[in-house]
Image (cartoon, rainbow, N blue to C red):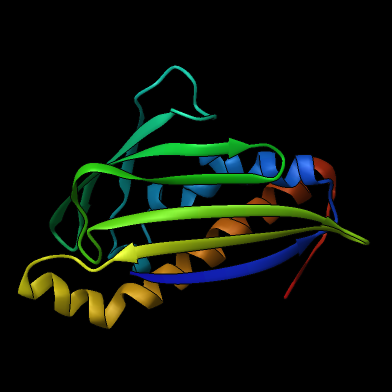
Length: 168
């Protein structure tokens, strides 16, 4: 297993920061839009539970990336707003560069705003081809995802509350 993390400071309340990052319409946006990092593809998001947030909420990502099928389900296993959230893949996954992942969000008030630390822990996939792709691209892709998620949250906060960010 490997863990990568990124920290960002926001001039907004911990409640607003947590809410923004907790919203998949904000932080999942990078996977639902075609981009070079997504291999020109995009994934579809389907909520599997009536509750879109909170412990037990589940959602499924499907689509193709680099012409290969992607299909994985994620469940929130810890949700303690506005401080902490943990979500991870469950069941069988079809993910190209890793076989399982867990995201961990920590939100902490600081003197001039709120600090959010977001991390991803992942396991390398099975299969020779996927192991090579993981070796070449997993860390790069994870860093991009963390940056996009925190940046998209920043954009949402700026749009909705006028908050300004600074990166650490």
